Image 1 (cartoon, rainbow, N blue to C red):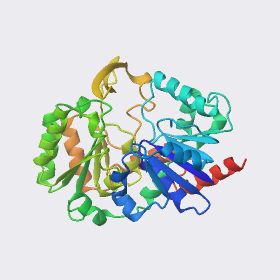
Image 2: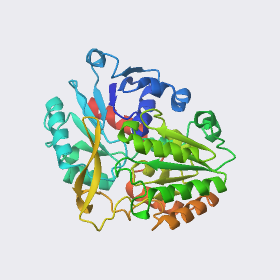
Image 3: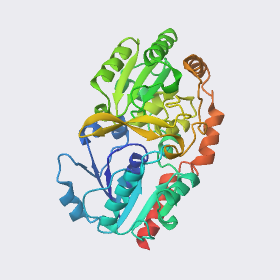
Image 4: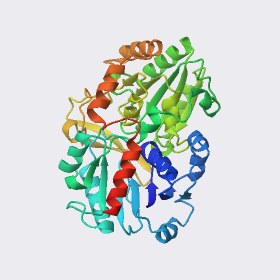
Length: 390
């Protein structure tokens, strides 16, 4: 079976499946990604090197290579590939979706995918879409208008790596340039999706950042500032983050576009603070405390959301609540402090108690993620082989 992975985010489930595909002697694999040089220098590549062809889509003539390869399956993460798909198409989203994709994005998806493999709103033997669980499945069928027979409930491939990590904290110390074994580590994950008001309804950015840094210094803890692609933030915001990090005794700033191994972030952390990015769902699998920041006031009719047009960051107003979120903010696997003071209290408790909030994480995983037993990648491979053979 020949598989081509065409990805915009060579992380999480896509990465886990690439490793599993590459290790299966019955599968031939080609990967097309951006920023190949960054990926091959990351810790995950050192411990789980891929033997397959890896092409940089900004440098290599990947279209001619894929055309010559003639894959049985083209696997795409998030965006639709621009080249023709000779046989079958597998579409994946690189994290359990917490937010609803705008209607115009869904129209673009169906239009582009249908050009390549035929109508994606009708039963199509050449097309599959991955789902994490029953709610995800229902959302893709009812809101994306995908046929039920073209959706597969597989769970999270990334959970295989999280349940059996290929490296430990001590192996990542040189990568982060931090003492991870003897100091606690705060993973501060800042999604760009809610703009640069990082702490949402909890209060003022400067005040809460200062309190987190003070707590970290008092407790002799590390802070890893884990951010989205660097181009998604303004120069002024980046300068502020650098200033905050400079005032923390032990810190590291990590942009997704420069350091792509986000498994390392999850393994290094002792507690994660995040403004409701889907990335925090993967942290639940570690069993360590996860603290959620309420990003917007759900009682307001409209909220301002960031967008990028022609490489310029701007904002637009979106109708709030039912048209934005698949899950209410109350449905999560972590802690949700009510204000800035409660956030610091939760942080202090989490650093002293590794199991703080673990029951919430276990419940969410059980309810929302299909069968995370360390064998998800093998289930997916088996299903794909049956699909191609059929």
